[in-house]
Length: 332
Length: 154
Image 1: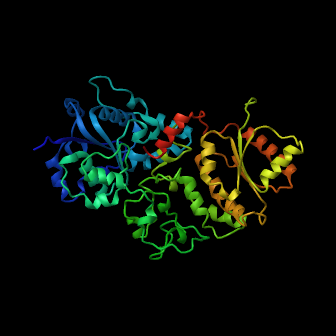
Image 2: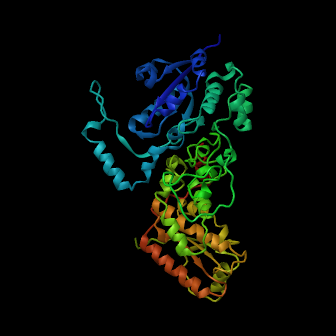
Image 3: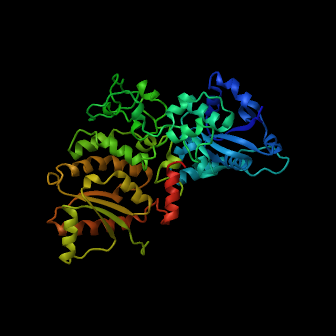
């Protein structure tokens, strides 16, 4: 029996659905502990930091959540220090996620709320003192903006097939049972080959498809033209017709495929939780271009009134990616 | 703020606006020197990504100029630019770039004076606004490459 790989799981600022997603890999969850040792997982095992300090090295760290507070940053640095491989799990760790939307607030507002939170309760703790609230950082960052990250598993939360592929490929490495065919089929070729042949995929690999969500969406695209823009609760989408041409902001065209188009299949427009595809420079202007090209008018006044219907455009387009993929606002 | 010289990036269409700018030079019309011109084949090919990238690299204003509606060399390229401009302005202003920093204008080949008035006015307006709030230091090639990698989430 080969030595079990040591795994750490940690959640920074997030909703912990990514950690639930690890437990949600169905029957495979039983074999998780057969092939790997869960050495540090505060959420499930109640591990304390001193438990991490006791260990000489962690093989794989699954880090979820965005970096928002000083304790998030500290955790990221400590885990990076201990871990051989660091994996950004979920949209928050990979791109900044929903907490990253805070970066859009004017800096005075952010400063104010920071000062409120960073009150007397949140100064640095002296030895032996009761713990306090951690300090808020000026900006929310993705994990890769704070420490070096080996792999990314995007999604909100990550899909089971990619998560399982990532766990098998990274945590089990060569001891992996050959049950990868489904995941390997959907992964980019280079990664699939690496996984099935038992070597690690190249650094920086993203566990998802390479193309856009439209590639796996079953809806038919006819003529993309609309005058009325709708939010999901405002009208019921037609069956089988492209959501964008019905006036919903569907981000499938700029978003990485891999989810299998589950949202669009259920009639919800794509929210972009897999981040942008490699071919897209910035999802914002690309979506602007795509949505504008569907306006059915040559008249500036009519176009302006259509544009007025859009609510929180930047927040919609950069819902999960503002902190790291918005060229104008991501930190240099 | 007095020594602030705005940097304006202008995307000029090959068939109308660029000819007007050229002709303005030949006619020795007085222009302020704050404009950097990029000649494109049509205002319709200026992807919103170009504008966003220009602002992220420190442009204080971006001008896109094309043929008057109906005069487009490619029939409807300028209308495509027009359709995009509204939503792009909305996105830019939500991200903190004032709407006035981005302009889409029509300049025919025979209108060098209009071009000159336009850029001189725009330079003054942008000067009033001050430097681009999202301006960063100009990246070196190495930094640029890294930031591109980062923007891919790598």
